[in-house]
Length: 165
Image (cartoon, rainbow, N blue to C red; front, side, top):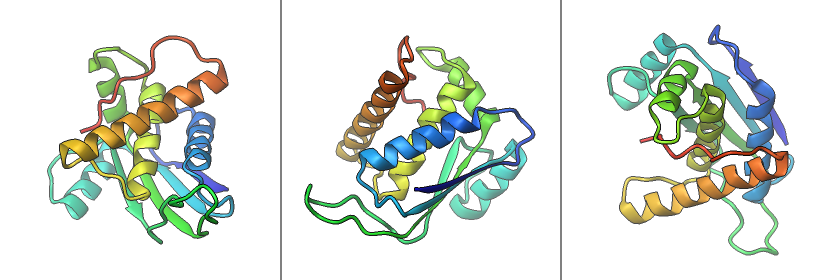
């Protein structure tokens, strides 16, 4: 799996954890091991510009996903997953920090960025949360992936609750 993490935000973030959880999520979703993903970490001003340009919404947001080849997980366990370019995930640590502090189970900016990375991966794979049933599926899968990764890493304490909208 080729995953690039590029921090352009000026904020120190745990890039290795972002890389690790993205790799874990893609493996769990059975995405081809030769697929490619880019994760870009930007400041609030850059995220606001992207949010306005692509979503026509004001202010910065926490995560945005820009799919390329529209890869999807294989439908059956024995299907060969397609290979390709997943796309880009853009994260904003300033928004993540605020969301982590405001969450019911307060957590760190890095924990929120890990959650947002999984959220972004799922969006790249075609998951959405516009409808209640879609939201339940996506957020359930997101929690299972984050919990699985945390357990594999031996991390203790409650997993970050979904704070993405």
